Length: 111
Image (cartoon, rainbow, N blue to C red; front, side):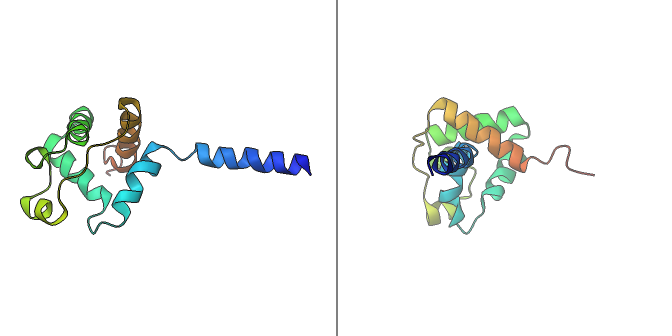
C-alpha cells in the first residue's frame, strides 16, 4: 500500500513540475478575456519585430503597466483597463515570456 501511495505521489509531482510559470500565472487570467492571448503576441510582434524587443517591451509593461506603454488601442484600454503590475520575480517573468514566445512565434513555421 505504501508503494502505491509513493508511486502516486511521484507521478503527481511530475505532472505539477511540467506546469510552468506561464501556465500557472498567464493563462488563467487571459482565458476569460474576449481577446485571446495570442492576439497580444501578434500585436507586440507587429510593433517590435524581434524576439529580444518583444520580450523587453512585454517585460517593461508587465513590471510597470501604463496606458501609454500598452499595445492595446484606446478603446480596449477603456473597456478592460490596464493590467495590474506583475508579482512575478524577474526570473519567473523571463521564464513566462520565453514560454510565451515559443508558443506563438511564427518564425520557422511559415512555408
